Length: 265
Image 1 (cartoon, helix red, strand yellow):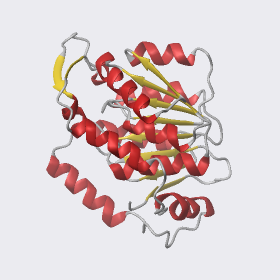
Image 2 (cartoon, rainbow, N blue to C red):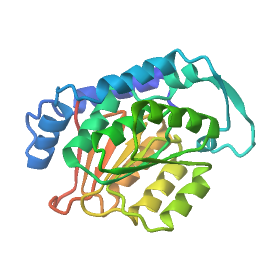
Image 3 (cartoon, rainbow, N blue to C red):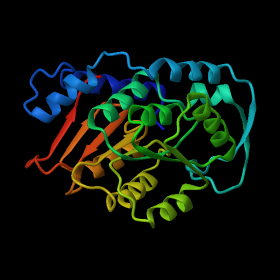
């Protein structure tokens, strides 16, 4: 992973070189619509406060979890003990990006959603509550963390989430064997080139022209930047949007020339 100083330098470069977050100078109608009606949508949706109330509970939850995190690539079987509040502080998406994901689902209305990396379920809640008629399949490597996520789904009354527990190297291929259609996927695990590219190619066969893939931590390490660059260059990828902390991948055939845009957010 990059050091804090390296990440700060990367962010400064992104901020200076990225396109204006208001849409000035953007010629693509699709991207302009994304900026105006998704990035800059300042409405306060009904789901925001209930989800953030649960986040507050997690930030003050002192229960100790015994966690084996398969997503890190470890196969040693070592179990770490951490409090729920530790994971709430270190692993959850920020309010800003959780609510952005809600708006993405609200605006484009995908029906079949996949999340790799449930964590405590806060981001899952934002995805699922944005479109109650959609189906969200979310995967979590740790049984202990998954149990807390399930509690949170119950607190929020969410009915459209299926949570799959276990090592992604086993659970994802097994799920994909049923040939699901993926309209939207959030890949929020690992910081390694090989794993990220592997997930990308696994999901690719189940996407279509209007699918969206979102990768987290795209500037979190040299490996992730290498993976992000390779994903951008894939022939079926026609548009990518770099928001520094996440990268959004589109496959729309309306874009005859590849576009890779960094936009301030």
